[in-house]
Structures are given as C-alpha cells and as structure tokens.
Length: 424
Image 1 (cartoon, rainbow, N blue to C red):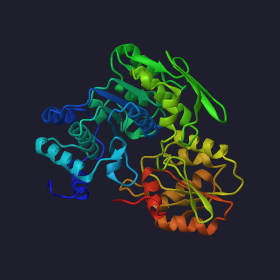
Image 2: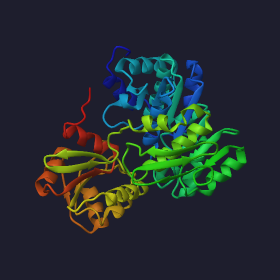
Image 3: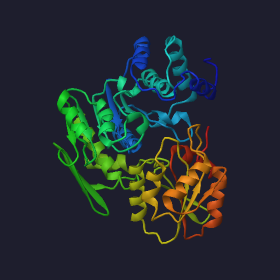
Image 4: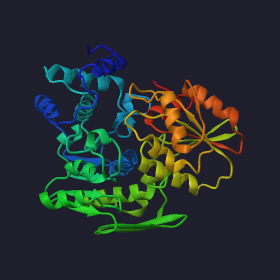
C-alpha cells in the first residue's frame, strides 16, 4: 500500500473505522506507544469553537521569526488534505504523508482509527521525521477526548466557546466548555481568549491547578482605525499595525495568540516590529476572503455556526457597502441552519442553497426549505456550486456582492469553481 497515491490512502482511511467521529484517546495512545516517536519538546494546543485556524496561522508566522522550524496541524482542509499538515508554513508533500500513513498502518494492528485520528497521528509522524522544533496542534472537536489531546502540550489556547457539534459535545455552552477545558494541564498555562468566560473553564482550572490566563483580566487590547496595542502580564506593545487577516474577531484572535506566546515563555518574540512583520504576512483562504467575479465582489467565509455567523454579520456591517447581498450557502447535517441564517437576515437580500461537498451535507431541497423558513425569503435551489455561482452572477449587478458561506465544504469547491484554488 506504500506505493499507492495519497488519494488511494485517503479513500482507504474512510473505511478503516465504522464511525466518522468516535471520541476517545485510548486508540491514539495505543498507536503512539507503538510508534515510539521523538515528538517536539515544545507543543502548543489551540482549541475553541471559532478562530482556531486563524490563531494557528498567526502562531506559525510569529514563531517562525525565531528561526525555529514550526509544524502545524489543522482541520478540516479546504481542498487538499496536505493543507492539514504544514512544515515551516508549507504543505507537507504527498510522499511525506503517504510514508506516515504506511508507518501507522504497519504498527496499528487491529486498532481501528477514525479518519481524523489517522490524520492526527500522521501529522505527528511527519513532524518527527522532519525534526520540527515546535508543533502547533489544532484540536479538532471538543478537547478532552480529541485525538490531539493525547499529546502533552507546554501551553494551550482556547479561543472561545459557543454552540457547535452539539450532537457530540452537549447542548449548552457550559457542557461544551467542559469538553474544551479538557486540554488544560496542571501547572501549565492555558489562555482563554474571549471576554465571556464559561464557569466550567474557571472551575476546571481551579480543580487541577492550571494557570488560566484570561482576556480582560490578565491581558487587554485596544484599537483605532489604523493601529492597536496589547498589554499582557509582563509585556506591553504599542502602535502595532493591524493584522492582515480580515474579520470582526481578528484582534481578539491576535491578542490571544500574543498572550499564549507570553505564557509559553517566547519573550523574545514580543517586540512590536517582530509582531508587525509576522502578522502582516498572514492570509487564510475562506476567511472573509474577497475576490472579484466579473464586476461583482465575492466574499467567501467558512462560518458554520451561530457565533461565527454573528461575527460574519458584524464584519459585513462594518464594510462601506450600498448594494444587495446574494448569499450562496451549503451546510452539514449537524449544523444549525436557522442559527446561521438569522444573524444575516437583515444583510442578505437573496439566498441560494447548494449541497456541500460532503456525505454529511444537507440535501439542497431540505436546506432551501430551512433557509426560507428562517429568513422568510425565497431560496433558490442550485444543483452544483458552479450553477449557484452562475445564478448569482445573473441576478447581481456590479453594485452587488455575493457571499459564499456555511461550511469548509462549500467554500473550497467555490474557490475551485472560481479558478482561484486547484488541487495538485
């Protein structure tokens, strides 16, 4: 199987476990014990509901300024699996991932790993093979039982907690916060980057003696139209340039990253010129990404839960725009359609539903029905992403904008259909 293509491996991985999502650490710990990996001495965890990908990208860029070789692991990907595993900012090669998969398969025996668990361990194998100095690992779901939590961190970041993955994590913020709090370690720092702190976060930190670093208490930030400043426990940075990432949450994410950098002891990186250089070069596809299609502005954002939709609505409101907004939306079947639609009701003039590119996607007719019910507006049913984009072009003018949102599994195919992103 080692001579198979990456696509062949990924197809095989989908059939290894009967469960796409099967939370628990025992399987991962068993395989890691058999692999005997020499993992990086410095590992950072990034958990939370929204903003994880942006935070990982900011961390990678800032940590790299020290000259360290940084490995990052994120999920899901936009179009290529390789996006999940990066070495010094570059996607891991097909061969590196194939070699990692083969090594895991050789030692796992009868241990059934899910697709996500296999990918997580492959990232660790790749980091070990390429002698990464620092690993930044995004927690995929929850925290306590997520595969990433099998790796011991030096420090962690929880970006925020809101409703998402409720079928697995719980139906309220406090229940979900219990799962997120599972990344904390006794005597080690964990940054909580949102000003709204669930009681479960503080309670768990007290129970185990974790060093909880709270936004608004242990660090603060302020901004103007042109710059921002940040103050932590022992450092203060003034006159910072605004980060290149767009969106309403960019400063909250950036401030949390700086707090993690301070808490983890990377003091040499907390200089204004270093931070500006690192944060000015970060870009992520599908996060308030603006492109032109014909003469019309197109915005792509992977918002897929109510909190992300509220942040998206704030970002759209902050833009100087006087035309209509046409929204193309695709979502997975465990997502809250009304929760995504309602924050955007006063912004979106026309809705177009399309099936996202996933077996777990909501069928287009059902999605259109739910969107129409939530928005009290008609929703056009498109049979493909290309058709959805073409319909948006036909009904829009140069003064309008097209919003594409609802899932990674709609933004990726849209970027490909627009000719902006192609698989290798």
